[in-house]
Amino acid sequence: MIPAMPAALHVVSAGNGPLLLFIHGSAADHATWTIQLNSPLRERFTLVAYDRRGSGKSASPERFWTIEDHADDAAELLTSLQAPAAPRPIVVGSSFGSVVALDLARRFGSLLGGLVLIEPPMAASDLVPPIPLGFLQHYDELAATQGGPQAAEFFLRTVLGDAAYEKMPRMFQERSKSQYAAIRTDSEALGRYRPRYELLRGCMVPTLLLGGERSAPYFRPTLQALAAVLPDAELVVVPSAGHMLHAEASRKFSDLVTAFAAGLAAHPRTGVIR
Image (cartoon, rainbow, N blue to C red; front, side):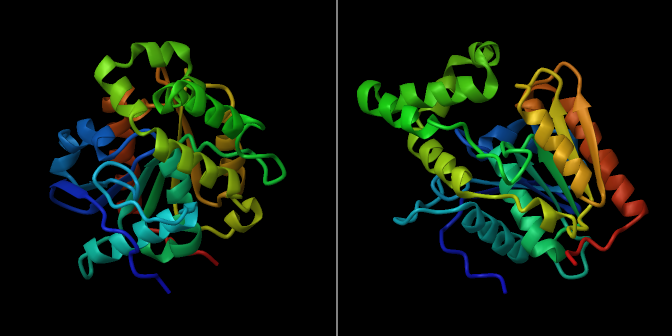
């Protein structure tokens, strides 16, 4: 049973056609998909992006929220958007958003036609801590002594790498650092979450796994672990791109998503968990 949506979500859309839902990562909001929302993808798909609870213009519940809460939100949103008899949607998640998308597929697979995951920041095994030991403690110490934005910068440099962070336009740096509270909540949620790799063997949702050639090396083992357990998955490493590959290599990203969708249309799968 899909729970009622516990938070009002800010949603934007563009285009016309089968539904393509984008879920953003940490230190971001729906605007991270601006290139896609204004790309030729809108000629093929109805593109929908939203601010996850606690990010951007979406409401922030008073209690702590988990990966599962975010996935419940996405399931309710999909249910409200999906037209009767329309092809089942493709869900695209970036970073933390890809963990949300993966949990969505694991628990609500019958809603999905396909899944695109960009470098989920999870461990490659349920036996390994999903975030580095001491990360949250150091984050909190920085926030207490130097302020939230400095803690957020530490997070961004850890995830993106120093070189990629320095290449970010100053406006985007400042915008991302202003979301230090949401980054802290996301990081704790990720620390509590376990992918349940063995259960993922029963997730039949066709999946495109994407990695960046220049991304931090710790993302690749997770992508390989997912490719090994998901029954219908393909792993593609995008040349000359990093963790934000949907922005850094937007044309290649759009081509990959379009080809993936075309393959699903030509050879539809069940998209269910068994």
